[in-house]
Length: 334
Length: 146
Image (tube, rainbow over all chains, first blue to last red; front, side, top):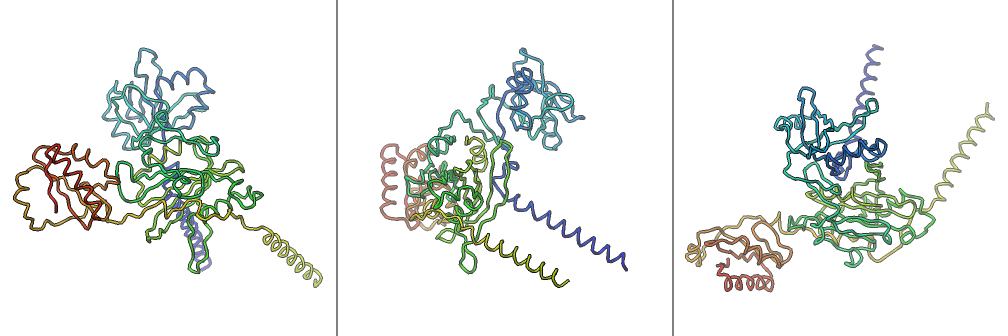
C-alpha cells in the first residue's frame, strides 16, 4: 500500500512537471518576432570568408563564430554517408581552401542529392570554429543552387530566400540621429511618420506592410519608435524602472481591460540577448479596434541604457511580411 | 516559551510593516498626459471592411449589353467598386493612380473591361468611369458597366 501511494505521488509530481514545462514554451511558440525561430542570415561569399578565416583566426572568430550566414560558393565534393560536403571558392583558381558543411535535416539530404560537383550554391546555416581541431564548419539549414555570380555582403536573407540588401535601403534615424535603421525600398511607399500624420505622440514611423503592392486589405503594420524617458516620463527619476515603464507604454497604446474595467498589467513574455547581441524584452498583447476587430500586437522593447527604449510594435491579422520584419530588426543599429 | 512566541510574532509584524511601507512608498510609473496616445492604433490601423480581399463571387444578371460583350471573346478585366473602395480582379487598389497602367498592362486584343457598381459612391464611380472612357478613346479598350 505504501509503495502504491509513493508511486502515485511520484506520478503526480512527474505529471505536474510535464504540464508545467509543456505549457511554458507554448507562449514562446506563438511569438512571431522570435529571433531564434525566424533566423536571419547575413550574406557572404566563400572567397571572402575563407580569406578572412585564414588571415586571422581571432578576427574571424569574432566575425563568424556561432553566427548565421548564407555562404555563396561552389560544391567541391560531397560525402552523403557522412552527411557533409566541401564548399569552395567560385573562382577556384584563387585557392583550394574549403569549408566543411554538415547537415542532419532530411530536407537538406534531398537537396544535396540533387547537387553535382561544380554547382554554385547558397548554403544557409550557422558557422562555428572547432575548439579542438581549429577548423571551421557550417551546420546547414538549407542549401540551394543559384545562378547568381556575386553576393553582396551587406545583404541579409530569411530561410525562405527573401533577401534585403542594406546598401539598397534608405536610412532613417531616431533620437537625434543616435539610432539608425534601414528601410527596404518596397516599404517606402507605405511609410507614415507618426507625429507628422497625427498617429501618436511618440517619435517614429509606421509601415503599413499589407499595402505593399496592394497585397491585402487585412492590416499588418510595423511601428518603429523611440521612447525618451526624459521627454515622456512624468518623473524622470523613474527612468531606471525598466519593466514598469514598458508596462505603462503598453497600457497607453493597448489599454486591455478586465471584466471590472481596470486596465490589466501586461506581462513580459521573454527577455533575452539575441544572437546579434541586441537586448529584447517581449510582450504579447491584443489590440481591439473601435470597430470590434481583434489584432495580435507584439511588442519588443530594446533598452537604450536608462535614456529610453526603441519600441517595436507588430500589429497583424496575418503575418505575411514576417521575413521582411525579421530582416528589418536585424539591420537596426542602436 | 511564551516570550519566544511573542518575540516571533513581533518579528513577523515588523517584517509585514516594513514590506507594506516599502510597497506603499513606490509610486507607479506615469507617462505624461497627452491628448492622444503614444501610438493611436485606432487612427493608424484601418479595419478591413469588405470581406476578404474583395474576392466575393458575383452572379451575372441579365444584361442587355451582353450581345455586344460577346464580340470580345478574350478575358474579362473586372473592376468592382464599393463605397470608396475599388478592386481590380481580386486585388484592392488603395489609390486610383495605378489603375490605368495596370489595365493597359493586362489588356490584350479581344479582352474587355467590366465595371461593376457594387453600391459605389457616385463621385468615386464617376472618377473610374472617366479613366475607362479615356482608355476607350485613346487605346480602344472596350468596357461594359454592370
